[in-house]
Image 1 (cartoon, helix red, strand yellow):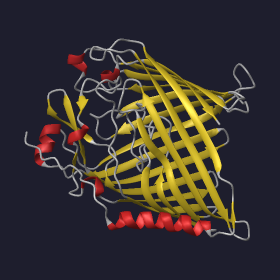
Image 2: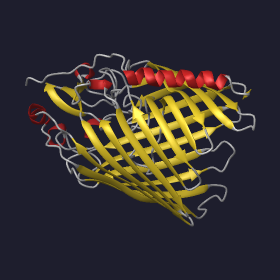
Image 3: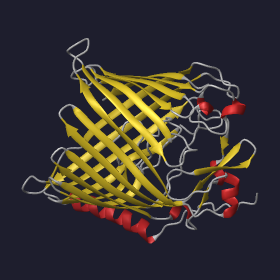
Image 4: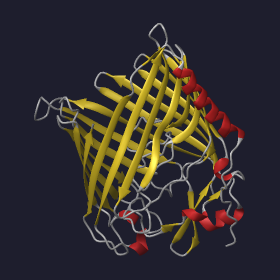
Length: 428
């Protein structure tokens, strides 16, 4: 198959100079403010060990380790009336992984300046934004790229450069975003576990946009608060953070990043001890070349996805010092041949009611079509010496064999990658 690859050659554009100029002017303007706070400094060092329960047929190791450092530096300025007017945040991260070069990185979670007025803010630089409502999957959360090398749940995000204006008061907020510097998804490397049986060749990534990764994306979001309701409506126009993977060589997949239009709806309704949640999207675009449609085997058109569920606080079960919450969600996708298209999630969250905010979460995502399961345990405990211990267990249960399950599956590609991860983080 002769597929033309448009590699993104970086070059500066007017918007790049504009964003850098706004950032620099903001910092200079902040320095002329009448009152500046001391720099708030927080750092952390984390050590993680991950043990895989089963051996892999293709990877020769059953464990890996990571060492990471993250800084968070914040400086703010106030006017003569003591009101916050400017804020500078820098949050670098360094991570080394013993087995996966893709997981080792030097990056920024934040490198941004905020100009703050009573009813509006202008934020520019690298930021991480979370648009999340439901527990099992976050369909609307599209601004930041996922770091798939860090975790399989796509909750680890890469910092995104942006120019963000937001208007807010007690009952609503409205924001506009311009998003340059598109970042490709980071997948596990060839020597990593949790990568499935295919190699993903990110060196040959292709874009629908002729500008490649230099295309400027845009988004908006309106959030309304009324009584027990929280309603959020959003729209994103730009390069999809989720690539289409098509086969160009045997056992090798190539990412293609289409241009999409995504409209999202998020609802939360709180009533007594119940919290109802909804995330829904309608996504269109996908003007793919005919040869890529053939190579990927996909005929993509506009489709819808949704996650609907609740979280209910339970009465004390065994110990009145603990808080118990039951979580349940249904995951639906109009494309029935994709993952999480007809799945259910059920979980139990236990809060320890301590000063450290310790928490235990047990849950399972169940594929109702193919009887596959992703079961997980997450436990977080903070001690009194600014340390935190995290325990994560993930079990992938997909009956059958490669011949019968490879075509359509949620978890079969990972059925041999059950693992236990233990990490310790020290804050200072």
